[in-house]
Length: 517
Image 1 (cartoon, helix red, strand yellow):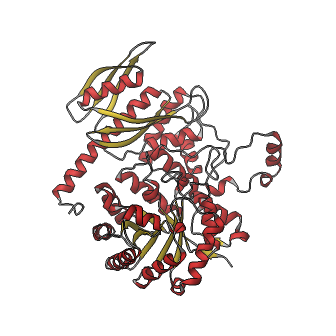
Image 2 (image 1 turned 180 degrees about the vertical axis):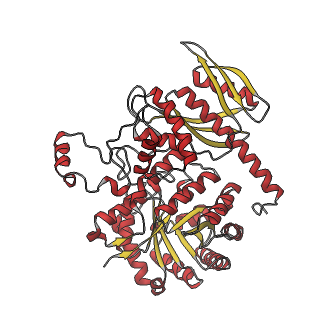
């Protein structure tokens, strides 16, 4: 008999914690909306006590995303729980997710707490969380390295105080599938009250076993699985949502579970996350990687042409990867462009289509043939999560074997335009120096990565940038066939985010924001 398993998506919390994955409030809301379309049951929107930005992100998602349960993470402390409760107050369906380490290693080395103190902290924190919402999840951090007797005692206490979901994480990716599944079976056997709550699996990929462990937990009775898009997360990442979902679909007779996920939205969600963070899955990544449905070997190509099932256990369109013979170029019209975006899963409003079409025509003057990857780069380039107060008007660079020089003209929050020249050991550094001169700020580049969107000499290049402005780090991106231009536009995108963050903070102070009280 097929069981319905709850999908708890923690892309916006555990996934976003990984270095380089920082998202703005607007970007988190946009991704949360797509997770709602994807069909996840629970969105862990953030960790409100960690920062004002996270608090506001959870608040906005709770207010705007209505179908899924919106969860906020909290340590077992009064302040964390109170902030989580305040952040989710506007949600249609809310959850507080409290956690405490239970392994002896964590209790002694990290928390400096006895087992008895831990039990009492669990009791108090679940009780406090219940004062804000009836839906409380408790997690035993490092459960897979916790003695079973003590783990079961902690689970009993959490359930007795009203926890409705019990999460048993493999926090450091240490367990094997056999061990992890056995832990769930033992907890169910030893704790009679566990029959009345949902047991949840949360696995990390330090040994490459996160998905295998998650599937083992489901087979052992877990009713919820915690995962992220593309498997992003701290260290080696989390269990990949798309892999768990498709394993359940393709091997239904083996695992006998289903989810409410709309699988045709998987690729689209993966692409959105990748463009927002600049962290694209490796080419051979299962389900959503660039090569997941590519066949180069002649014998494979022959088989696929005769019958796709010979070498494809998943039909590409079931995960939202469209295949089309429609070729776009500089003579293509708006209708052809709109049709291709529809085939890729995007229904664009007339205003947005108009803006993308102008960018498409400019790109078509530089490229002979526009591929799907180019279109997705244009699409995500069209989203502006901050007002465009600074805009690039002109860029000229001169470079050779020595110092490079760049002349930049910007429009901004001042009358007319401003121009400046900059020098550097390359054209990108020179362009950054000129932009910094115009805005009168010291801008520290923390990371810059370049990605070729498509093959060939006329490929669109994407630039993903992290810069530090006035002590705060902002992520930004841009795309162009001219990598220097893309870099300058990414820098300007980061500056616009900085200005927007300043205005939001000023507004929050004026309204006496709850966070920080």
